[in-house]
Image 1: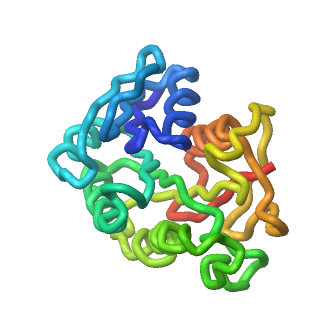
Image 2: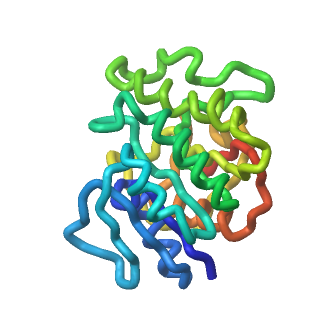
Length: 215
């Protein structure tokens, strides 16, 4: 079993990943700026500020895998990319892989086609900043990290989030940077995204890669 640190471990995607990893017997640490009212048994919950490098370092140190499940809103609206640069540097120094919860808009509708984020007509204007910021991780920031950092950016289907939690079906499909379901974005529940995400963490068969999970 692995020691898995989930940054943003109480958010929608993060909490699902924490629950899935813990259910499989992994030693899980969930780092977030506030502690949840309900906790997954056996999980180590750590309260902290993701903009505080010392706080991040304390939970990255000793981990076998680091998961970035932070959202570019609230306190991280303007510092999201800088925080992830710090996370990447810490994970690289620790010699452990970094798995990042991505977004649908960073995917492409077909091989070689522009990413969805290049034409955000499909999304309400109030979300454009978040979509562009998350996509920048896989477009610019992660590829620019040292080759010693093993990273995987995991995009969900378009209809993914607390607005459409869905049910656990125990199935999913994996694609690369081309959306498995490009028309309308497809869907995947939080539980099945977490199922696929932890499968990827355990398999370790993608390296410095962009993948996506959908039904």
